[in-house]
Length: 339
Image (cartoon, helix red, strand yellow):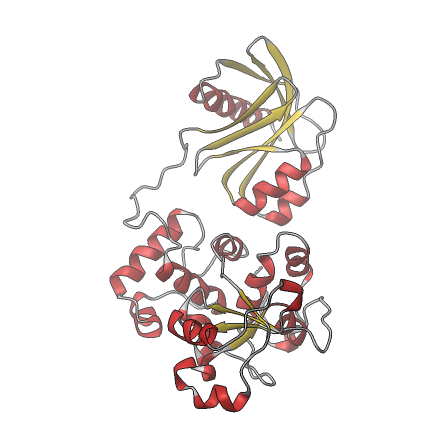
């Protein structure tokens, strides 16, 4: 890091501290040989050395590469955008951050602990008409983008594909651009969009002691069993993810709507305990999950799209996310890694 960059970061960090109501003086120290910089923060009668790094858009993999600061020294990475997944990785490594776009400052060291919102230093030239890009329609759009990562998003095409008005699609795309999750050619920024969608992916699963027989499912058209898809661990095994499941592992199924789920729960026995489940069922987080155009051929149940399976694994912040991060599909499998 050159001296001028370090000077700029020191001034930016000082401005954020003052905005947070912490009068402070931040002075740059001599540049380091490892490419990062170091500043001295004087605030509230305390002096704290702070290691500083800068990135444009901090991905989880980049956050993993930051070396823990150690000792009583703080560490702060300054970036245009820091996703929630990256923030957790930074916390675990002992790093704080200054998120320019979202306006959030975290410095965590003995005698200086700050975790607060500050004024964003990057503001979109035109405010998006949609504040939250992950509304139900937004999740549908985000999933389509991840399932078609090389296709440029066209409002007219997506209107036909998703049944969302072209104007709404345009507004949602603008909101994704505002969150720095879409490239200039309107293809998704990867893996940032995947992990951003994962933060809003929260299906409510119901554990069943048993499923109706296949003949009963076929006879009950209101269950729409022809639209059910298999996801999570069992599907991940079939798709080649680095996870193990026994031959009798209970399937995790998505149903197309609340009506189907209500009918199923009304004629099924709920498992008394999660460990006694024969299957789990949930309403698909977006209609696209059960769309035949995204389904893959399976055995009894069609497989959900690999992106859906990866999102379901990612809801487990422990082993599931580790599996996703280690899942590097064979190109011959037809699975495109977007995570």
